[in-house]
Amino acid sequence: MYAVVKTGGKQYKVAKDDKIVVDRLEAETGENLVLDQVLMVANGEQVDVGSPMVKDAVVGATVLRHTRGDKIMVFRRKRRKNFRRIRGHRQDLTLLQITDIAPDGKLKVAKPAAKKAEAKPAPKKAEATAAKKAPAKKAPAKTTAKKATTSKAKDAKAKE
Image (cartoon, rainbow, N blue to C red; front, top):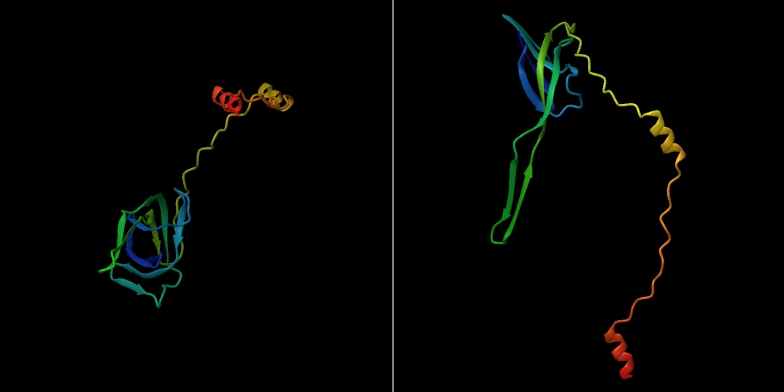
């Protein structure tokens, strides 16, 4: 079984357990997605083609990671004008793994792996109370010292 899905303005032919690279999607790593823009579903000899989308068909996917594409150099010039500009571009991409294709819209999606709770060390009570009680120390007032006159300045005054 395979399907043709549309995401990011592009079309991809996918089957179960395929890994595809698509334009960046706003999803966290490990999150399950539902791609609902399915243009075609084929199951052996049975082929369903949408006009433009297949009704109730969905594709389940899991975000493996976010990455960036290769650098593309964009070079612009104007002849006889000594004008040249070089710019680089790297596209943001998302790596997806197709988990399921459901022509009827009922996905068999496994629950995502439980995220480990980020354990933040609790501040010690003694440090917390000391930080609250201790007032901020003020910087000592700056003393204005008279500038020492140099010997050149003294000589200049003596000549006058």
